[in-house]
Length: 340
Image (cartoon, rainbow, N blue to C red; front, top):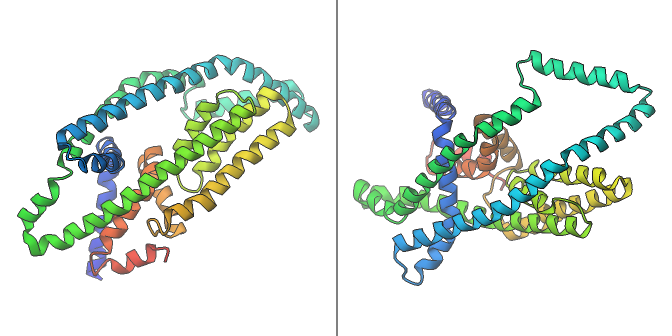
């Protein structure tokens, strides 16, 4: 009983520390997962006897250049989307007036309801939409700072990637270090396998979404493809959320209910086929986490770190489960977390 109380106290203390120091742990966790992803090309270059420092420079440089060029394309789509916002807003209110007629409500009543809705946000100390946009623009340097932290952690973690097992061996001795290195090896293999395949599957999803929207002539197809790629890392709800914006844009752009339903059906079909057919076959057993555990981890890490926590929820939970499997006192909990 005392042992379980100690574990609960440790978990509560760890939660408080992780949430309080989120500004430090979030970039560290993102950098750590990037190390797993970039470990695939690093290991590939290692087969050709390329020195470690040169491999790190090549991989980081190519990654930064790819993100820069890709970001330019996405930024162009975002700029065009911002320019088209007044047109979409006008169409939104025209559709809204049609719905108001069906609901038996006048435009004046709808305007009064809308003003009351905004007033409720103001009373709750929420900022108006314009202030939110300004605040987001003003947080650019904060975002830049977080990016620099991620790059700093990433470079040092990649530099320590190969030498860490040797230091553990020298520090703990061969007998004591074997279970530690075995657990770390399982975590590395499982998380790298998951992230590598998940990245490829998410890229496939984003590519298919962009191609379908381009074929239908929908604006900002690349932007919605990138959104589908990013949200596909959020389990269960991410893929569904990514469908809503392109469907709404289809309605505002074309004004056709039929075409909108067709686009929605095709996008949902892509998400269903990739998520329920392709991913299970490619992933195999994967991280062996119960669906309920995946959902609870999504809620917990989302509460802890927001959207970054949702993106990191599955790998972090899998690492915790593998670590708990190494201790006799926590092994039953790890078995409860498993899917099989």
